[in-house]
Length: 140
Image (cartoon, rainbow, N blue to C red):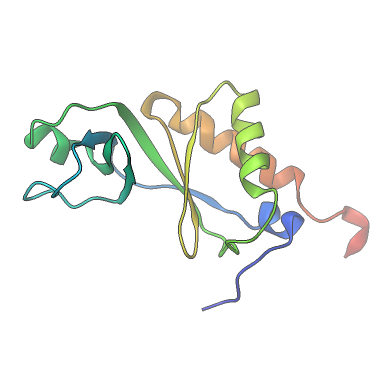
């Protein structure tokens, strides 16, 4: 496993966004157990309840109200949890493209959940950000 990257320029240049297959749903449950047959991608406990990110079909099958339908993009660079600026740069690029984004930072990668209908546009915006963050042509 490679070392975590903390330098913003290097993070942006090597973020390599990948669109994961499928559609995902944000749902909220009262604090307590997760229903059977639900395998969350992520969970977060808030005072109002337990937020889950799950495959959309699992949410539908369990009859859970879907708060947000999302496509899941993973930035494949091994980002340092203490790195400064990656979330801001990504959020700015997506905001400039008119795309909302919910970011989840995990131990190795950052994960972006964008509206399903904006997935291709989000990937394009992120690849443009990555290309613009490449090494200067004169530094080879």
